[in-house]
Structure formats: C-alpha cells, structure tokens
Length: 197
Image 1 (cartoon, rainbow, N blue to C red):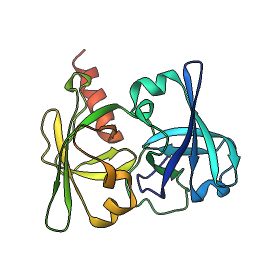
Image 2: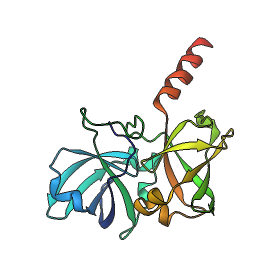
Image 3: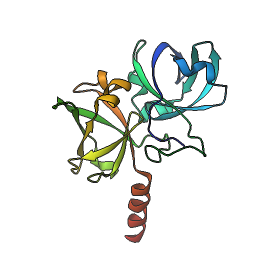
C-alpha cells in the first residue's frame, strides 16, 4: 500500500532483458535503506527489490507489467518516481494507492501557469475508468487532484514543490504515463456493473 507522496526521484542506471522480463537497476539515496523482498512503487508500479548494492538496487518487471505500464519505454538515464510502502502508523498524506496501474495515458498539454503548471492527459475510455472533478488520481505514482474531468481526458494542477521533486519536471507533450484510478471509485464502478447484470 502506498500514498502517492514521492520520496525520491531515482535514475535508471542499467536495463537488462531476461526472457520476457526486464531488470531495472536504479540509483537512489534510499537504496541503502532497502532490503531484498521489499516493495517499492516505481512510477506508481509496485515492484519487489531483488538485489541491493550500496546506492543502487534492482527490481524485475514481468511481461504482464510491461504490457500495462510505461516501464518498457524507460531508458538508461531516465528519472523515475519512487515511494516505499506506507507504514501503518504514519499519516496518510496523499490517498490510498495500491501500486497497480489501471492503464496508461498520453500527455496532451503541459502548460505553465502563473507559479504553477497544468498537465492534461487523455486515456482510452474502453476500459471504463473514470475521473471526477476534485477526485484523486495517481499519475506515475504521484497522488494528485483532478480538474477539468471529461469522459477520457482530465487535467491536474502541479505546485512548484511537486514539479521540482518528481519526474513532472521532465514530462512533456506526447509522453506516456501510468494511471491508477481511485480505489473507491473502482469499487463503485464494479458494483454498478454488477447491478446491470
């Protein structure tokens, strides 16, 4: 379980293919605090630490994960949002995030405002995921509030702190991002689907 509050922006230092899987080695300050078998969210994708060496650690993404997220588009040198699992006795500063990506979206616009930024994303409506105005959304692991909610498009407003301390500072039009929709909204959607059976 995660909160969508990014701890650190790591750097992909090595990418290795292993059959249909990809091993990512990530350089990060938090690496020396990790242990094997620990869960860490990478751009919102929960992956298990399989090796730790000083200031780097390794995780493996299987084919299923690669097909549903933006991880296969990462290159060596790319920045990635990192968050360790939530402590049960800690404050929930973002919202409940499972680390399970629902689908990807495309950045349609990245606009500078007066002291902030607004990013607009579009996504495939066939999967029936929805956003609501002022609802929660997770983009590349970052907990954010939805503005301008439409059928298959929404925007988020980014404050300077979030912009500087996440990979949003490198995000541009055309980039693919991971989306995790609000878990409560997903349960409501499922219950409504069951009622129509």
